[in-house]
Image (cartoon, one colour):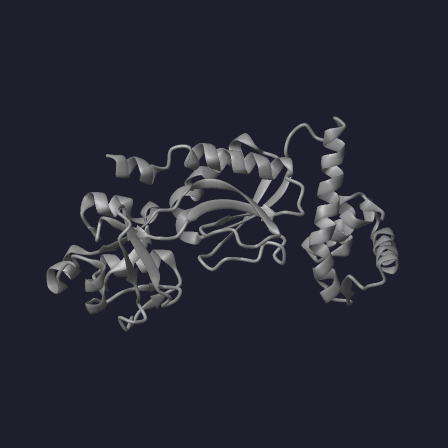
Length: 305
């Protein structure tokens, strides 16, 4: 397969403009169209829908696009292994992350990263609802759960300890639970679902945080809004320590059942498709985040103090 034509297709898919993609590669519009047509003929599929007004990806083109990016990544990696190619990392890195964590810890670091790596462009997709890495053609994502997808690989960024907390005003009005059984009489905030969470203390005693059984009236799918509701007295919630450690420190939130944590191996992972070559731009960004965030997480330092 002609990788120059594949590169042209990726550019055309990104720009939704064949002529502009051709110009970026120094190819005349007519030649660019002919090359794409030849690629489509070789693949036996129409990759792009063309009209006099616009260009759009076909269903087959959308399915082929992540593989096309992988072909180019493999080519770059092969050249690098032989000592050829660019000495510095370049290109666009598509990164997906939970918005709440990104706002607190990643966004403040981006100017420093971009200053030291002028050849890299960052395309961030921030949402507390996870994106599909492969379908979305992402290079990297931050996940705060066990990696169950066999198509993904990952590196640990940091532990994600989760604790129960509530506002002082809520506890003053409704009382403070002394053991997990007391939770059933409280307003419990649910994050994304009312599914129960198992609790465990240091001695192996267990309990359950069950918003469904408690008749949870508030389910939130955004971490920041979830914390704000907790701060304003909506009830008892499970929050990641990285999100609430400053609030616990200043007293605007109080840890409930402080001997208990959520009994699941929750870790912040930097994950990427297993099929992808770990390109220089991805490796550099992973190393940067681990150095700046993972080696000495701010929430762990706060807990130690």
